[in-house]
Length: 135
Image (cartoon, rainbow, N blue to C red; front, side, top):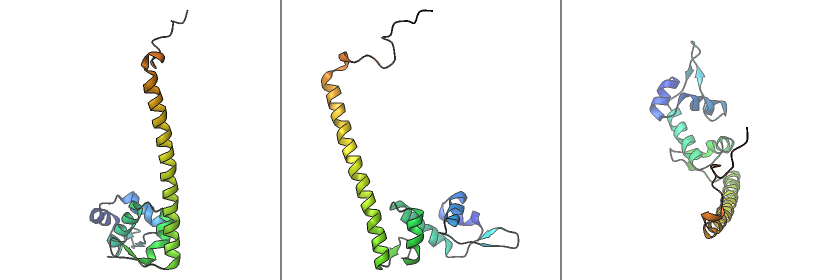
């Protein structure tokens, strides 16, 4: 099938399909006319890629995991290298969540302090309290 047909069947834009191919996630042959030609397994592969991207995995992670993918969801065969890669990614996500939680807590403290001080003690942000600049 051509790239337009694959895009229609999967709901994925052609530029994304080209990106997947460039990242080694999706394979396409070339017809005599030079057009990309995908086999019948391509829609399943695209759905697998989409699910893994939604899980927060990078295209590099996905390239590593795809050979172990079975089915659309996909189910991943639990070889030790695969599990180590997924655990590493999970740790990175947990670190990001912790950092965001700390930022959220700090911002909440600032908001609380600003609300307790009251708006009267702060100049307006629009510059309306400034004296006109002499010409």
